[in-house]
Amino acid sequence: MRRHKTARYSALLKRAAVLVQNDERLIDELISIMYERQLSEEDVARHMGVALEELQAIEGGTADPTIGTVRRLAHAVGATVSHHVEKDSVPTKPVLLWSTSKEQLSLATPKTKVASVGASTRISIPPYATSYARKESAV
View 1: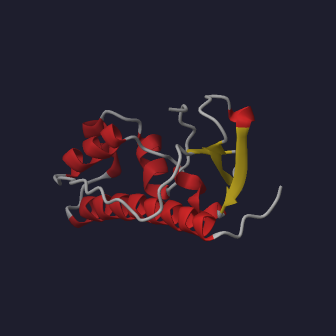
View 2: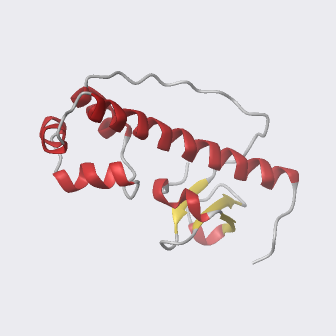
């Protein structure tokens, strides 16, 4: 795999890291509220309609909850979540994120508008981003 040392690549890595940090901060804040209000994991999981193990995986950072699951977590702990979207200065083609192993997250930028991963160029993203990676279908 060839190394990408361009400013665009660095900006994409920075964006990926910021997205992961924002997700982690959101979950951490909701879990903090759960503990501040002295709610048990069992009660919160029951109110969310998920298994206790799923809540524990979310709390531990080993699960990638959907927006709906985060909304249910917020509701179960008595909080609201607001979303804020901000354009950054680096335009990008559609990008697919997925975990190729437990240790690596890959970023694929399609060379053409195709859904096939085989027609993509892969570049590495630091392993700290793996807990929130999931494969998405191409646009």
